[in-house]
Image 1 (cartoon, rainbow, N blue to C red):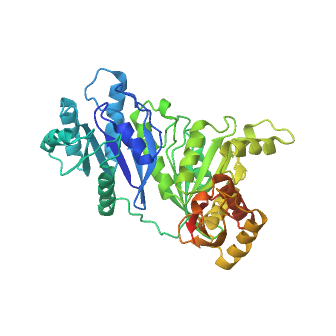
Image 2 (cartoon, rainbow, N blue to C red; image 1 turned 120 degrees about the vertical axis):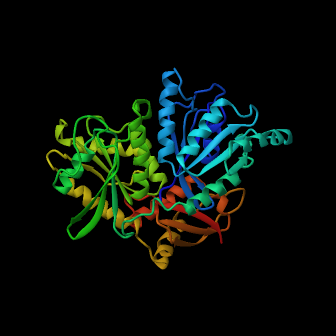
Image 3 (spheres, one colour; image 1 turned 60 degrees about the vertical axis):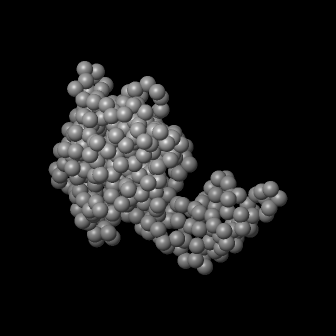
Length: 437
């Protein structure tokens, strides 16, 4: 189930610091100047075995003359509409302001679950002063410090409890039906690909970027295979999101990635892969989705003997570290290799659900360990004794050894490469865990 939480509040209350803490990385720019977060930030947060989408919104200022603040206010409204739950952040050091009251008024009208986070409560006197925020009238109130992290566990527990109650995203599709999302930037030909595959004008196709605002599901039968195609709104770089509908479509596209088993990333051959494409790609990898890369408009490229080979080599370098994915050169207009792209997506779906027999896994992987032992750490020889596949949605393997914490990235990569060499996991992110035997 795709669950989205938006962090809202007036400028400079610590939303981005809190966002970074929940994601355990520095993704949002943090500064004492109000209005630093103008772009929306997206990420996947995890707590107690559950994950959810997190959106960091800019500081909310209603009826402002400032052009940026007006844009931010529009986008905050959309984030509230699209989110399943809202974290409303206020600042204990300044007390309740007019902007906090305006935001509270907006949130009360949304009828969404609201968790009030009173930030900068880092000593006892602040805690006493913070009790005035009860007057805003929200049931769930948490006293936190984004910088030290105190109180964040309680608010995350409350998010998890809200997820249990929320049934709005319950998937109506059969669990076993493969779901393929066509993702990519606006105007690369996603809707045209869907129409070419379905053989009818199911979606509006035009040259105006951002025609597809929402996700569209199409049931499809091909070669006795049934699957669902999800056409997402074009994901566009945030600096280019001028109209609020574009921001809306980005949230929807992230939800479509959540729904899909395999994401088909569509690129424009002429433009190559951009930073935004790589951001979309890594988001899908983080979420453990299968991936197929489709290079569209290949018919328009000038070709020499090794054009496709060189293009593919360059593409794989850009996609590293995870680049074991099918890359198919297509032309939606000429209907070149478009059915091959579906066959590749079906293969990746099968790879994603591949279960390897434990005896076979140990035979092959323990031999690989014998051929190349883990490096000795602090005089300790690391010994891997046993491997098993865990019952998860994404192929996940547990390696049991005497010093699990001493296995570093290069050796982890070696083991992953050996798994890929011996078992077909093309197009699928593989997870490796090391546990005490």
